Length: 184
Image: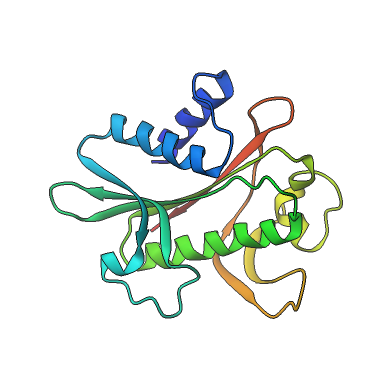
């Protein structure tokens, strides 16, 4: 799955596939995965209850892309996507972390692997002040531990049990992407 995502993003970088928002990213990636792996079902916005998972305690309820073995219905992979277009950098970075926590939770319930993919066209996601929540996506600090909501009431937090590192890769002069891999 991780290699497939890298191949897909290479097609985006070369201009063969065009993405312009999160919806286009989700559907173009899903179409790509379906064409490469006919033995798997690639589903969009599937509720976690479909997989027999109790919803209580989960960071989210819907999986952006789920990959299921066609013959056995075994859950193979999950992909969470972000393509923020309206600023709100600290809130979006917190949302990145929430997605990573969600993927970890799903992998613990039986999915073989999960991936978080962020595509950004605002340099403030990957450069600038590098303290607090920004450090994880701007200077290579580990994405790990308890992460508090950086704005507003600051009344929520996520806990990431694994340790990950964001590495931004170039799509074009302004747009970059990163992949966080979560394996069982």
